[in-house]
Length: 274
Ligand code: HPA
Image 1 (cartoon, protein in one colour):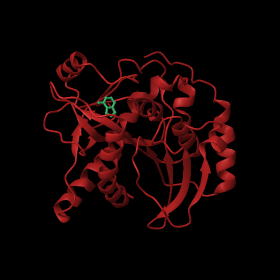
Image 2: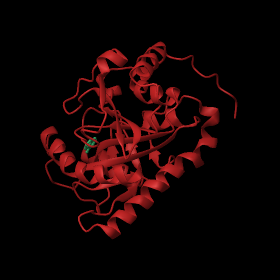
Image 3: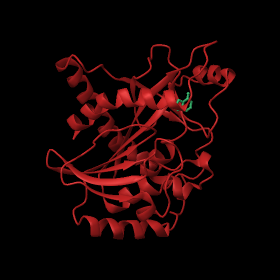
Image 4: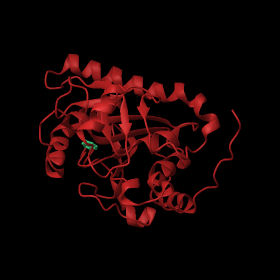
């Protein structure tokens, strides 16, 4: 494969890292990017918080996206919790959409946990399920795959990213067998569409034929950004609605409610993974 030149560093990445270094000279051992209404790892000991406006020069405009970056400890380990993200459907360019993930990567954070709210396509899924995107290659991005960060190196990253996915999968299985209140997680293929509209029923039928298990509007850019870097990345979808023929879809409020309930289980899972 022909080597493609790496894009020069987007200037705000450097600025963001300078600010973060002042906030904490210690590099976090993991970063968590939280999607719509996903509330986990709250009130951590020794928390320091900075707004996206301050660190990235913009705040996310979507309801359910707080737009704050917190550093705090879980079991003594420093982690970064990024509440909210920027989406292509908001009209932002690729550089801003991947800015938070890229800042973590360039800062040297070794593990990137991504989360999102998604619609379930797999008929075995229920509202409130957690779906681990099986592996780095288990996603489709018909409208996203336009500017991966370091395409020529992507192949090499496949294994390292799968290590984090495997760790989450194993941890979830252990939790499910030891804790009655922990419902086991699903694993599947995620498709990232541009949005912001939800899909038509015909599009849903098409995506099912493509063997997609969940559909959303984010996460793929960050997974692509992490490919070819030393940062391991994995992603979990909170299934906030399940697509069934002839059933009306809930609105954004319903999405936030389902995400809230699943957040409790996700919080347990993430703490166990750390
Ligand atoms: N489609 C796209 N994005 C979503 C959905 C959906 O059904 N649910 C939550 N985010």
